[in-house]
Image (cartoon, rainbow, N blue to C red; front, side):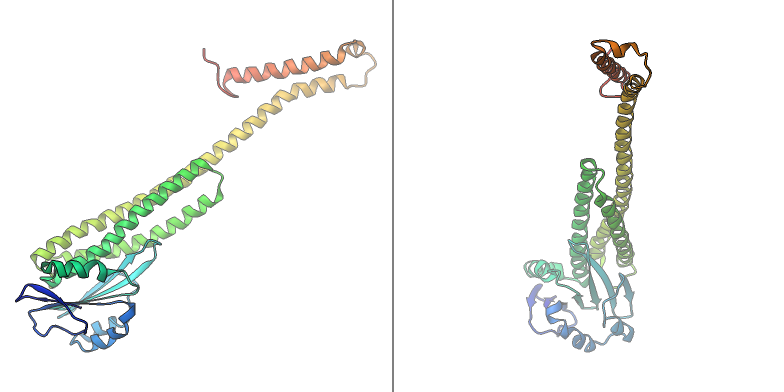
Length: 317
């Protein structure tokens, strides 16, 4: 735990977990999975509202904020690189901030040293809350950038192999993931609006300004998620269009080949009739004549299709 001394304007680190001896000092106490067993014993030693004590027993499944007379409880979700959500609970009192994470999010590694080097960052409980929120939002923004790269890669796969069925399944999974992420981010945006309000009792003017600035990031995240959902719909429609286009090209080729061989089949059938008087059958070069006639007929039809632009490149006039 870290304690900020308002008298000395300094931050000190302590191993034992307890509230500051002076009500003027400010403490940040963080619980991670390795010392989570101490959390319940510690919160029971605090003089907090019974409902608040009950809510702290377990992590909340949804982001929310509850403000009581002397404390507030904030439940947040941090998004990891695999898009799973990690639950965070923050208890705020008049001179302390207690944070607890479901999984290790490196909050201590990312915040402890900056607090020690720059004690002003712990000068108010609102500033400690700001830095915790800032770390959470930073992970969310990294998640947005990662999703953008994933969707761009998915779009490239459509052009590379539009008949790949895995693309449609990926689009479906991504839409489900984005729906869950948007619900989480929308709930956290509501939390940020409550915290950034002037009526929130645990922030001052300086920390309130920083927190309001963070609130804009959540609006950006939600807009990005909506954009990604539209992009997925476009990718799915694009794949269907490319599939139809490729199918039409195949059917067109098969049709043209059939049209070319149809008159050749007619000629073969004509000379294959069992009539006694067919002059060409008596010719010395009748067989060669029939082959040449079939070849010329097929080539003539193929050249006509090419000239019309139905097969291959249309000749420039």
